[in-house]
Image (cartoon, rainbow, N blue to C red):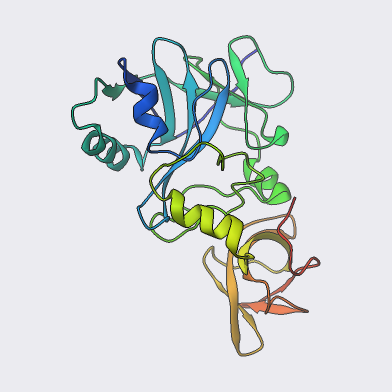
Length: 254
C-alpha cells in the first residue's frame, strides 16, 4: 500500500549517545521506541517555535518538520547542543501519508485517528486527499496557518488533546509557562471549529459587534478553524463579509 507524498517536509536525523537526553531537556514530548510522537520546541517564554514528529529507531531519532521551519530549527538545536555527543543532519528521507489501514513500516498519526498514518522512506503519489477538510472537522492546527511561530501558546492550540505535550516529563524549554497555564489558569482563548456563511481570507479578524473576538483560519464545507476569545464568542459574529457562529462557547473542540 502506498500513500500520498507529504509535501514540504524535512526529516532531520538526530544521533549519538546523548540524543535522547538532549531532546528530553528541550521538547514538549519524549520520543518512544517504536511509536511516532508529536512534539514541539518552545521559546523560553513558552511561545511556539516549531512542531514536529519524533520517531525513535534505536540507532537514531528522526524529526519530521515543515520544510520552512527546518533551517531555523536546525540552527536552534545546534545552538543547544553545546558539547553533547549528538549529531544532527538531514536524512533526505521522503515522507508519505495516507488514510485507512496502516501499512507495514508506517505509523499512526499520533494527533488524531482521522489523520491516518505517516511513513518514512516511502515514496508517495501526488496529493489527492482533502486534508484541510479533515483538519477543520477535528480542529487540528497547521504550521504557518493556525500555528504561528513566536505568537502561539500550545495549550491554546489544543496540544493536550493532540497528545503533543507530556505534563509529567519534567523540565524542557518553556515548561514553566506551559505548566502555569495548565494548572493555575483557565484558558480564555483558543482554537475551535466554527460554522461560517461565506468565505474570507485566512487571517481575517472576527468581530463580536464592535469588539475583536478572534481570527479566522482554514475553511472547508461551511466550517472553519478559528482562534476565539471565549468571553466574546457569542451569537453571530462577523469576519469580513462572512458570518461566523460557535455553538459551544467556553469549550475547546474535543
